[in-house]
Amino acid sequence: MEFQCPHCQLSMTAEEEHAGKIVSCPGCNGKFQIPALPTAATKTKTAASNASAPQGQRGGWHEEDHANVNFFVSLGAGVVITALFLLTLLPFKGKYISDIFLQRGWVNYAEVLFFIWGFVILAMKWKKTQRQRRAMLLDIVPTKLGSEITSHTVSGFIEHIYKLPNRLRDSLMVNRIRKGLELFEKRNNNGEVSTFMNSQSDIDSNRISGSYTLLKVFLWAIPILGFIGTVQGLSVAVGSLSAGSTDPEALKASINNLTGGLGVAFDTTLLGLILSMIMSFPMALMQKEEEEMLTEIDAFCSEKLLPKLNDSQSATDDLLMSQAENIPAFAASLSRAHEVFLVKLQDASTILRDAGETLKTRLDAHQTKVEGTFQHAVDKLTSETRDAFVQPTKQLNEYFASLNKGVESLNETLKQLGGETITIKKKGLFSR
Image (tube, rainbow, N blue to C red; front, top):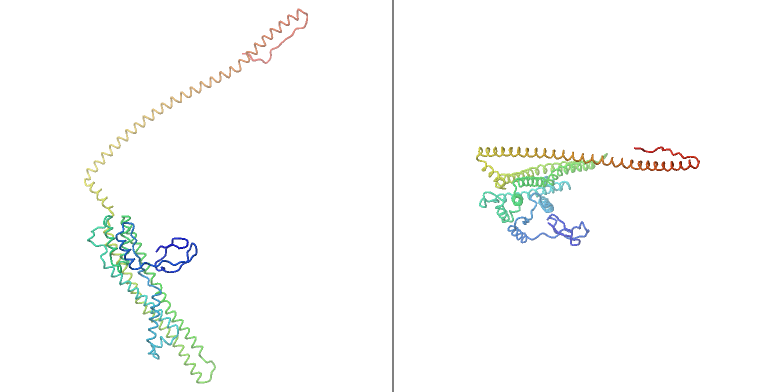
């Protein structure tokens, strides 16, 4: 069941057996009471609305624990029956059978309580099992609704389950089939439904096995209590001996106490062994009965429910097979299609080869053009560089030639005047 904290509005969930209890919120640590369960009238109204609800909006119903019994109810019944049993033995006090239960101390009381408590649990489990047996007689998937369960007819089967009597609807078999059909309604897959059914079977089996945990503890505790009573009785017997006493009366009283202690010791062990042995037989029969019931439910789901589910996947396979009835014609058509494919593939290969050769020719022409352009650019750069060095040299030679003429003219003038002449030497000049 789902509810919210009234203080911090934190959403929480809890099992329905905790309804009405006061708990602390894990978010704000505030204390509040879990809402109570709806009444029987409300449950009936909810079930009726679920039956007519569309796909994906059904809420199911409250599922009881079909294996475990209420701990406190069984304990209270065990205590009351134990008290009544011991009270019925009071008129027979003094007899051996009555004294085993009444005169052997608290150990025998505990053994009787565990024994009767265990039988109460077995009786309550037997009552639950009989209810499950009655529910297995229901026609849960009636043939009148259809010989097959498909995505179109599954909603009618689910509505039929929601209309079953309340006292029989909440059972292992009905719940498992209802959940399987609702899963099929959503997913429309036989494999998923089969896997879910197997998982649900394992869950029910584990729950039934776990319901015998307390009974197994009783089978262990009853003989252990008998051994405890034995040790206690022997301790009392040995402690009652009057060591070194010479008084005959005291010695006689010590012997009486010794025999009484030994009686307590052996009677507690005897009672514990007998009660545990008696309890083991109905417990084994009850466990066998529940396991057989689970086996019958599994067999019904595997043999009656799953074969009726039709997820329409097999219809597609039948259609393909019907289209391939004429196998020779189908093979000839497939062969022709293969030949056409090979011809088209060869044509495509030829086109690709021609395109490759054309591309190679264009690439070679482009490479030749690029190389010519690059060579022309290099030659032009070399010519311009050479001209850049030759032109200044030519101008310098012309300058020296002009200067030499000036000097010669000056020398002629100096000769006429009778002075010394000037000589200019060319040195380190570039000549072409």
